Length: 518
Image (cartoon, rainbow, N blue to C red; front, side, top):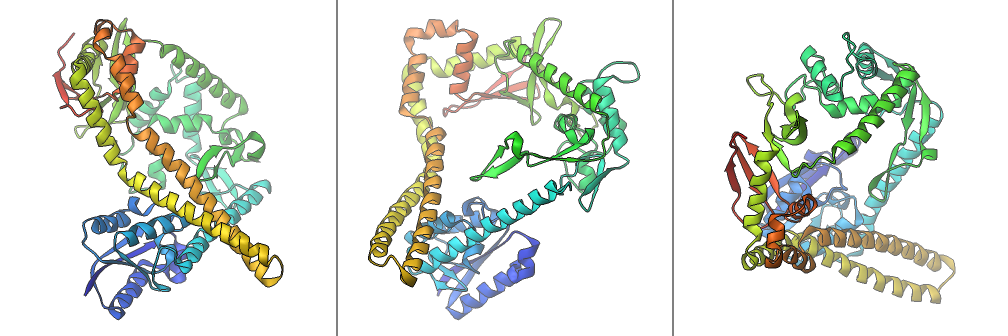
């Protein structure tokens, strides 16, 4: 008897109500397996959107692993749109599995005999088309609601407001919002204006419940309960809803990518303000000023800016009495079991020479460095192999669609009118849509592959940079030269107690160094 794995997927309560619940799907798949003489070896489920690539889903990834290790002969799915809602994903997956010798069965249409099975193509496209129609109808409905002066609830009601039937009204948390603006714009009781970090620390110390915890009482946060983070404060200080101007459509999804909308497409709805307009505007001016100052401060030569992490957080540059250091950014958001914050810092004068010495040790032997770069390139290429295989599949499907389009064009030329002509035109539209989707997937994969691994040109450039002829210059390199070298090698530093662990993209052992006081 052939071995089979069963796949089921659901993404919304609505689908469950329509009979797509996971138990219902699995029961139908079991019946299908019994009827066709399969031995079920595993069952996998996903509660996730059908847009997500199959291999990236928890259950789908396990199915793919079983296929790769020859642990199954067939995959049984309830129906095509339970496999995926995207036509490209359905076609690529079907082609890959069939070519790997795996049978693909659907409870409603039976066995897919070939990758060209027209029922699979049509039903796969219907699933994608239905998703697009649902998205378009939902977007139109929300736009109309906002234009009518109503707030569109998407589960993201601003902190300090309650939502009910298209309206938001201030609640008891509104006083916290006013306090945040007062601290930021005017100052605390002592007249000291607090920074965003200072506000987060003050709210944490006061034991104020965070917005996330209000929405999800059982939310398990890595930084512990009651700890405010600066991102939350940033959003609150920039949200115009607090001065009475709630905005809808600031970002929209176009061609699978979320983009900022043009100003004319943003819909503004008047809501009850929590702070006056002058205070809100003053907060924006201070934020803009701080942003300009941060760019000025970025000119300080923190060699490892953005590359050092401690207890899960990036360390930031800080200067105290003329001495530069890297300070743990988790100081105000991370609490340890003893209730103590991290407070870790490392002097730049200690860490920078350690890391740069590690880079020199890796790069200053040209022969060894060339070999390391080639090994790194091969390792990165191996990691991109699934994308290259998918690209090959997509390119084959594009050729297939173009061939199909040519045949349809010739058929339409012979029968341009009547019922036959209408059917042919509909088929041509479907092929055009499928071809455009496949071309978009191809372009995305090409860009990801090109950016995902060292190219021969990059290797040549890095070897030139680190060649014997410039070793003396490298040992006395400028700040920008060092930053470029760190970026090329993708150097990362992890502070672990009183040690620094340094890693890079080439296959050498991690460097572990003691942090001696300076």
